[in-house]
Each structure stands twice: as structure tokens, then as C-alpha cells.
Amino acid sequence: MAEVSPRRYWSAAVSTMLIWGLEYYDIILFSSLATVFQKLFFPEKTQLLAAVTTWGAFAVTYLARPLGAVIFGHIGDRYGRRTSTVLDALAVGVAGLAIGLLPTYQDIGIAAPVALYLLRTVQGLGIGGEAGGGATWALELTPKNMRPYVNGVMYSGLSWAVFLTSAMTLWARSFFGAEGFTAVGWRVLYIVGVVPALIALAIRVFGSESREWLEAARRGKIVKAPIAKIWSYWINFVILILINLGLTLYYYGGSGYWTYIMPNIVAPKLGLSKDLAYSFSLELAMYGGLGAVVGELLSGFLISAVGVRRAFIPPSLGLLAVAPLAAYLAFSLNSYAVYASFAMGLFFGLAAAPQTLYFVELFPTEVRWTAVSLGWNINALLGPLGSLAALLLIMEAPASVVSIAIYGSLVALASALLTIAGALIRPRSY
View 1 (cartoon, rainbow, N blue to C red):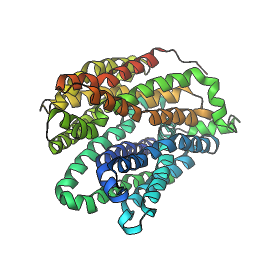
View 2 (view 1 turned 90 degrees about the vertical axis):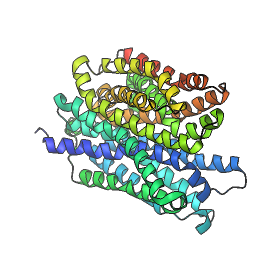
View 3 (view 1 turned 45 degrees about the vertical axis):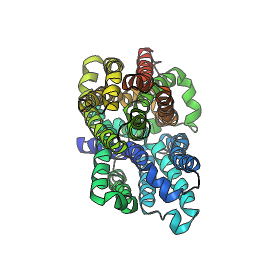
């Protein structure tokens, strides 16, 4: 079977980088816009009920993701990778655009929050199919000697999204002003997010089918129910869960929750300005995202040097070392926090990028999309519990920056150890 041209596999990697980046774009954007959504779509009489319904709209996306992994994984393993990538890109793009154009509660009443929940569900289904699945397609198109480097570029989309979302939110708040941002600015951010989805969709419509999947189909290896076959590789699935859950919890229980925690919990507890803490948290997210991009782009060289399985351990040890210091500097609004945030992002990028390459190697072609995507999205559902755990720990911490930093980094420390544990388990060959 003829080898795929570099243009084809690099295009596939770029399309995955763009769509998958919308996962973290959404995480940062929604957490940044929570108060805006609460005002526009959930004007409840009590603040608690408004907060619960607002964050419920955030959670419903995560509840839908494992189902999306099963649906799109079945399509990708049974009927072809490219078909599934086109459909999940379409779901993510259309849902994002519709949210940006959605009338508010004042315009259409109860239909507004109901529509928001439905669109967030569609978005979750699409991202559930894309997370892990798009990478499977792109890496199967790529020659094995190029996979570590293509993988690093592809995975960097997640961190580019963190950097760009934080930068764009800061810009929009400054450009539109407080009232203009609530009225129009947040919509601009959502509509702009559709652009990468459209580019990715165009690439995929005219893209190539995975040669590995075509070969499996030719040899009669395609199975009717891929999800039922996963359990034949349960030890490999456990490895995926441990490594990915560790890194997912590290993000949510580490710097990923700062844009909410710093202005709403840390600032009042330490008597700091909420506005200053919020702006500083976005600045730190920018530096952390930039550091992660650098780490992800360099990950291919680390993988080539030590092997993909061992590549998780050195940066995870770095994450263990940097987490408490980064939290201390961030929560005290210290200017040196930007360097610690960059370092945390760098180690995170180095540790996170090898996941896709390693997980694709853990499973045979006929169940690969379903296995990788399902494991990834089960962890995505559990990941926000890291933020909740960190939130509860910080709320219980004494009102000193040292105590809050120690309590606030406990989840990150445990998560890095979980990743190391997963990397130390020897996988089953198939």
C-alpha cells in the first residue's frame, strides 16, 4: 500500500490540532464567562441556584463526552476514521457557533437555558469523539519514524488554545469594556472559535483514509462491536486510565482552575483585589499555555531519546517539584509567578504530549479509536473533580499564602505520582 504524502499527514495533524484545541478553548472560555452566562441565561432569584444551573451547563458537556467516544469510536473503528472525524468536527463547530448566536433568557425565556444545555450536549458528544480519535486517525496516516514529531505538533493545539483563549479574553474585556463584553464580547469569542473548526472540517472532507484501517478492513479484522473487544486489553486500558487521569487531574487541580479560584476564593481569603487576581490568573494561563506549547513541540526529541513509555517520568518529576512553588507565587500575585507558570506548562507539555502516541500503540487497529477515546473521555469526566478537590482544600486552608499554596498543590502532587505509576506498568503486547 502506497505511503501517504507528508502534506496529507501534516494536514491531518493540523486539523486535529485545531479541533482538539477547542476542548481547552471551551474549558478556559466557559470558566472565564461563568458570571456572564449566569447573568444572561440563569437569572435565578438565589445566587446558589444560579451558580448550580450555570455550572451544570459546563458539566453536561463532560457527561456527554464518554457517550460521544462510544458513538464516534464505533463509527471510526467500524466504518472508517475519516468519516468519524468529519462528523465530530461538524458537531463541535455547529454547536459553538450556535452558542455564540443564542438569544438570552430576557429574549426567549426558559427556552434560552434549555437550548444552551442542548448545544453543550452536542458539543460534548463531538469533543468526546475527537479527543483521542482525531489523533488516532492522524497518527495512523504518519510514518512511524515521524510520529513523535508530528504528535508533538498535533498535541500542541491544546496548549495553543489555553494561551490564545486567555489572551483573547483579556483583549475582549479591554476592547468592549465591562458592559460591552457582557452584551457582545463573549459572543465574539465563541464565534471566533468556529474558524478553526471550519478549517479542520475542510481538511478532513478532502483528507485521506487511514492506511492502517484500510488494511485491517481488507484482512477482515473489523469487529461489529469494538467496545466489547476493548476488555481483551484491560491491562493496557488501565495504563491509559492511570497516565491520562494523572495528567487530567494535574491540569484541573493545578493551574487549570486558577482563573476561577484566584479571584473567587484566594483573593477574598487573602484580602486581595478580585479584578487584579482575575487578570493575573489569565496572564499566568497565557504563560503556562506558551510553556506547554514549547514542551509539546520538544516532546518528540524526548521520546526519540528515551522511548515513549519512559518519556512520561522525567517531566512528571519536574511537575512534582514545581507545583507548590508555582502555587505560592501565583496566589501571592508575585511577578515571578509567570516564570513558574511557564515552567509548569513546559513540564506538563513534555509529559502530556506522549500520551496520544503511546495510547495509539497500546491497542490494535480494530478497537483503537474506541479504546483511546473512551478512556480519555472517562478521565475528562473525572478531571473536574480535581478542581473541586482543590477548591475544597483551599477553602479549608488557613488564611495565609503558604498554607493556601500547600493545600492548593496537593491534588497536583498526587496526580503527577499517578502518571508515573501508570508509566511504570508494562503493557500487554497484541
